[in-house]
Figure 1: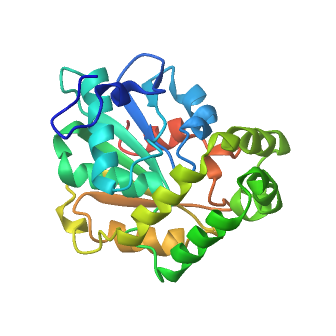
Figure 2 (figure 1 turned 90 degrees about the vertical axis):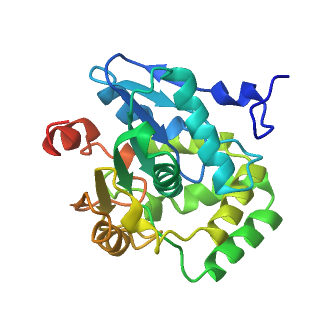
Figure 3 (figure 1 turned 180 degrees about the vertical axis):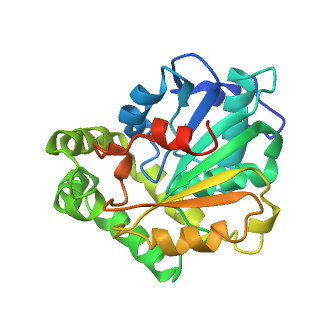
Length: 257
């Protein structure tokens, strides 16, 4: 199999990549689930205006640099003329998007970062999550997600959307989940935020019970040279599934995008 310079098979570049619509490119970077499937509602709203690209994070990736290289290969394959993309990163995907912006700013025209972070502290939370994910029978994880749905989603998210969330997250693997948690134990952009010059909109849900999104977005937006911030009132961590959140409208309001 043909490989790139870093020895990673070229076939990974387009693995499970989906494209919807026509227009300027918009690439979605998924959260810890890594499936890329949870953007379905926003992709439907955005596809009349954008070429929406979604993909699955590689479960075997053990470093952020590997995932950064994967994202760049997606862009090189789908946008060979070098057209900068609008990058939307959710939670873990926001951390990855900012890492791409530091390594390859020429590939990004602008970023939207939803409910993300520059560093997760204390790191004992990550170690505890890794331990739990290692010992809990993986087949029961959908029950855990069902029991914690009220803390993860916006309070007004429809039950149909939550059921769809539970169905789609069954595609999350233990390997991918553990590897991404491991990556976060070493992830820290606090001293590098000032070097991200890509225009960035931070979106933060004020009822996020998973991470302190508003606090994190306030911290990050104050350090990026070209950043703005918007608080999503009444929303939880997984708010892209909420009925009253339309990223298309938010983008129009943010600099007419």
